[in-house]
Length: 117
Length: 110
Image (cartoon, rainbow over all chains, first blue to last red; front, side, top):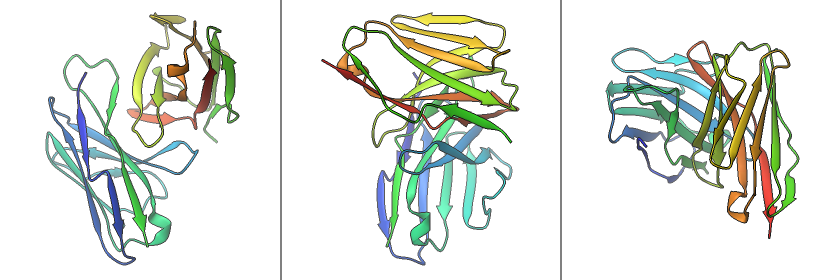
């Protein structure tokens, strides 16, 4: 199946700093990628839909100035958590649909665990 | 409000038995529904997709049913194995987005 790579897998930062998470589709082109966050024992919460070459679409309640999303190419989307605070600590996961022979399957990255001290 | 509900309590079964997990939803009209497996600290992995006009789908030891009248999907694992122990998530595709349930943890005991 298609492969989505996410980096870094773990990051610890100080409160007030910004953190960038990268999501790459390794063997397919993804015009659309999705960013989720997941708290322990809870569901994946859709944060935003990232579209190549255009602005991301954010879900209600998600601050677009806090969570900056850039989808500069068909294989790379980035999520930047700006001025991170301890409440931003979470598991962030990206996903993408394979554009060819689309079966509706989502391919997920391995996730990035962010800890803000 | 929109909801996707999965049993939050863990399902404990004996190896060799059939595990059945439930996904109920309200106020969605999904074009299709999917099931994913998630292991601790990892991203979800796709298992099966079933479309709104399909009632049942099978893949090896897995079977999914989809009842759009009841707004429910059932996910079955036959001849379960300890390696099947994981959290299973259902996801709905609704208006070009995917929405997930909170998952049910399955424990298969040898």
